Structures are given as structure tokens and as C-alpha cells.
Image (cartoon, rainbow, N blue to C red; front, side):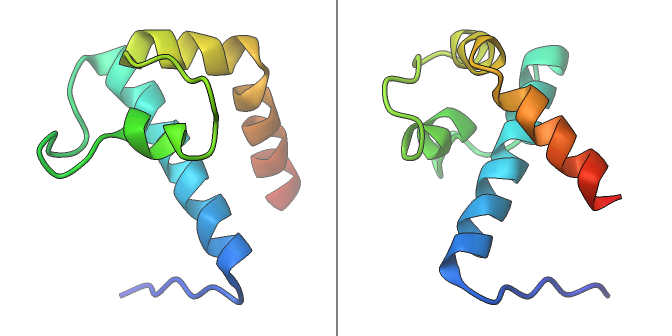
Length: 81
């Protein structure tokens, strides 16, 4: 079993944002929800960190793509490999 450990709160938040961004992309591409809507949603989680985020999955995804967030995420992933 793999265990993920964080050294501080900032690392924990960055991990949560990165995972939510990947989940949102998958939700838009496949049309399937990645989590139980009664427990939470990717858009609501991301709205904590991105003010003014659109309320629909497709709208939020397009807004984040237009803002260059996914390019930033891809460049960070490339630098980590």
C-alpha cells in the first residue's frame, strides 16, 4: 500500500487542488461524476480556492482552461517527472 504524507498544510492543499482539477477534467470528458454529490463536488471544492468560479462542471472547466490553470498543472507534472 502506498502512503501519501505531507510536510505542511500547503502541500496538502496543493495535492487536493491537483486531484480536483484532474477529477473535473475527467467528469467533463466522460460525463460521469467522480464523487457522491450529496457528500461534495469537485466544483464546490475548487470554488474554495478559485473565487468567481462558474457553478457548472463544463463552465468551471472552460474557465480554468481559459485561465491557463491546466497548462500550469501540466508543466508542474512535467517538472516533477
